[in-house]
View 1 (cartoon, rainbow over the protein chains, first blue to last red):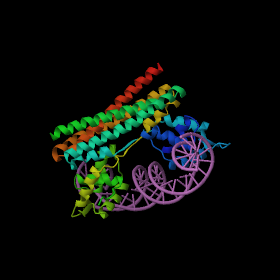
View 2: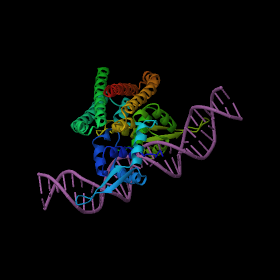
View 3: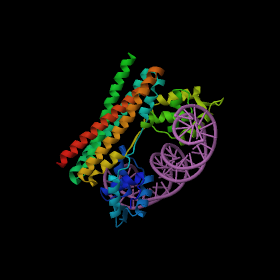
View 4: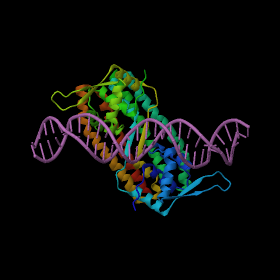
Length: 183
Length: 183
DNA sequence: GAAGGCATGTAAATCGTTACATGATTTA
DNA sequence: TAAATCATGTAACGATTTACATGCCTTC
């Protein structure tokens, strides 16, 4: 067995594992949840759905019957197994960050002191904005936990909030440090 | 003016801004510093060096003369200006994370309780390993600060260390939380 | 003289975003 | 009836990794 999942295949399989879904659903769900640590776009999702179906991991059913034409997918037994295998596989956990804030900060010696402080302020604003988005997701995620018993999306959201809160604090400390040096 | 820099072009320009460099140098420097928030590979670096030179932002000089043949680049005045323009430009700061640890955690409801705890333990180990790598970079980065006056790479490293320390703490708290629920 | 680090590069494959095209249904 | 949302998809482009190829120089 041991089907190799593509990066996007992983989110899709996981999302369908949480319930029957259309490609559109998956995109919306990703945008409202995993986006902050794992994004996906239509250009990836729809082709990947077809690949996963050809591989026998998911099965789609057309659901026209009066309503809008849509194709709803669910996991096959093989798909359920592949999902579990991935979730428990011992391979390295990829961790990749692309953060322009940190990159610009790294090159901060090319800036005037006040420009550098201003930059850190912008980094902080960036994290504060993300924080606001995350906090806005809290009610719906809690509801999902209470009503569907999905506790891990909520736990994950709490973790994300904590991390960005810490990042905000860290920026504030850097601002103070830089201001002290300038004075 | 306002030359559009590609993502990889940014690191390259910044790195050359810190001193004359070959493509090989840049790759090593990136691997020892920005990699944790901005990676780059040979397949990007060498073609991008040529593009930047064609665009007039950097200038390479062959330095054979007995030693190994190498091509050393430095910023042109236009390159210096483009670097400063980028560093102070008001555009959105990209922040993209691809973290399989969080992704698997998000789907943790498909796991047994002890499997989920084990996963968080692995996430923590992951951050601890990164932390060890970052701490190993401290002496050299401090030296660079003291001898070349590059204070921002050091500041950035401190920030990275703090963030991963916090992530480790966060994992520990999650482990406790999950263990409490199980009991 | 073998191994390891210095040095430059390319080709192919993969991965991902953006923009576009299309059209149905629901709600204001 | 207009706007918003649901819904599916593709093409083009851009970004990135991986693997390969090559060869010099220094150190053991």
